Length: 278
Image (cartoon, rainbow, N blue to C red; front, side, top):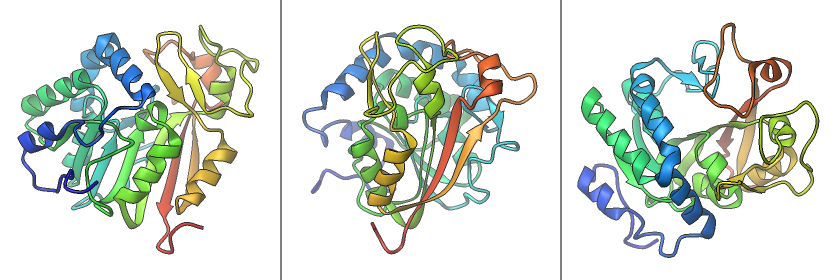
């Protein structure tokens, strides 16, 4: 990417000024998703941002505490972290409070506006970049950890953003992502909440065209493992999420009865091999 790269220590204005100049013409799904988020989807997340920033780390649509679902590594002190699809920035704020050095990138300027407001309110500051997580303007091997909680993992092409995450990580670096489970995706119809029968084909599943114009991505386990291995990752853990006692969600695409019978979310922990791709 030549000179269109940021380096740690660049000012907040330098980071904001880079924006999408490094990306050129945006892919269709990036443009469509940006429009959906900036035209309305971000409002609900903005309304919850203050609570998220003030809370202890918790995960997914059921807000499972870090003490019950250990997504973040135990030691983040001094670690360089890229938050791929950072949204309102609460995950990066948790990382910063734990001693890490996060950088957030998100496709939605509305989400980032909320994140900047929360940074000022809570006096926790870290770089925020308006851009496409499929093309991140940092040099190779810039980070120790890449993480996505329903961010890039859902809204970016896996055949682009996962190789990009591998490029950004140092040898032995870790990629952690949380997404909807295979089964939830297969049981969710085009409209309405998850059902107790399969509603989608698994073979060929990758890109889902949403009714509101958004484009969502989901690779089933087999293709995902093959892609991760091709990019030089070793799968260390796959956690299937079960909601705790008293769990509730503001999201309407799955209810608690369904989620107590089958996993609605999953967490992948993979590590970049020192030996490179298979």
